Length: 239
Ligand SMILES: [Zn+2]
Image 1 (cartoon, rainbow, N blue to C red):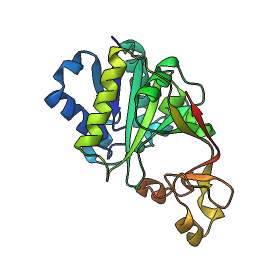
Image 2 (cartoon, helix red, strand yellow):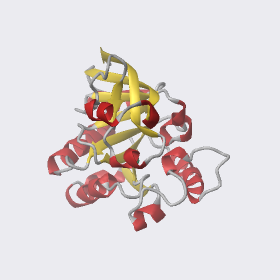
Image 3 (spheres, helix red, strand yellow):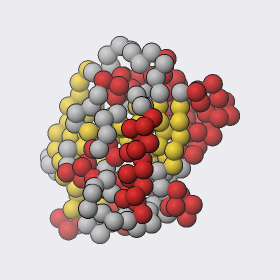
């Protein structure tokens, strides 16, 4: 049997992890032998804020001296000590977008198996250097899931639990076709007019140039410099 860590609230105001573990405890308690849960940023979670001093998912680097940098080290230590086959880093967005994975370019066999098991069809491969400061760039078996707050319901949670259950039991399944989006740019706010931003649609090629991702997320609207990610290359392939 495989072991899975569910990492909730790397961003304190995102509650997919809470909803998922609550549902597992209530309706699938047998899974708790193989599934651990941890809150990434407890202080921000308590305050219902994205972060306290620095965005935790940009704090996985040595030079930083913030509460979140300390948490980043604790999260990595928990992952190393736990011997997990898979870490699911659970995020939500206010953007109306179908759920998708975010993964590093080089991913382990465990990650590939989970991609195959899951009905989620879009995989965003993070090639921009910000990945080096995020969780998935600093450990082997972690992937992020982004789900729209508008879509987190019983059906979505149950489908996620079913995938986790299948992964724990066998970890093997037949090949599946997935869409890969390779992110190598951040959508710089100063480069586009508000009219252009309105025209950008998630996962649809914009001006023959890139596929916007999370372009309408409230957290990125608040960021000073960029508004979501851009993928300049897309491929559909069997994995
Ligand atoms: Zn997040």
